[in-house]
Length: 70
Image (cartoon, rainbow, N blue to C red; front, side, top):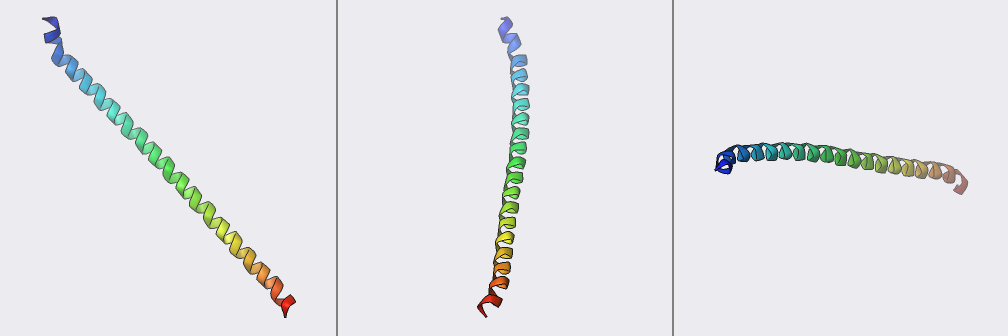
């Protein structure tokens, strides 16, 4: 008989625990999404710097070779 009386309280306690776990999972998902965004931004910045370095090298090489070829 005691289990029947405890059941509503136990159910409410489990619902609170599940709500807390859901909040924690949402927070962890947010942190992971922010980290993924930061990594993607770092990748894009690296690619941009590589392209700028390549283009600068091509321009300098062209400026050095044009007078020699003329």
